[in-house]
Length: 139
Image (cartoon, rainbow, N blue to C red; front, side):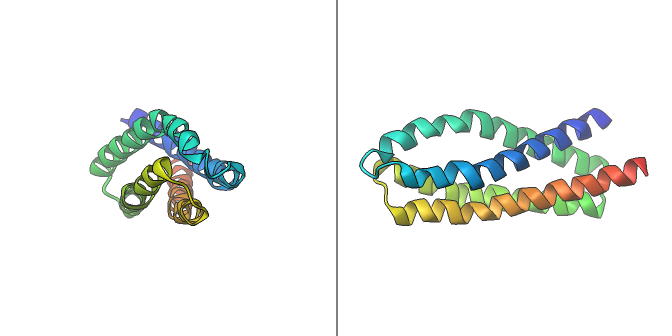
């Protein structure tokens, strides 16, 4: 069963790094795309879902299995943060990206960037929690 945990840790660390990249590099580049060209750009940007969605599902699945097998507070907090990430994704990020596919504005671009901090911070905390869990396992 440790294999489930290893996959979970890997996917969480990957998503944390990806989210920081998106926050610090990808979303700021939205400001240099002309607003009249942005909907086409955003439609092409949707391809990122082919990477993020399967990984988020894998993270959720392995995290819930590991929590079930090890009902400890660290994994419960991690599961809560996965809920925060999912909520933020489907309540903020997805609707904002869908709006940007139709008509772009600096207000929407700033909103998508600012609300993504919820996910960036949540994934960072999840990674730190998993570092603590790994330390507890080997220490």
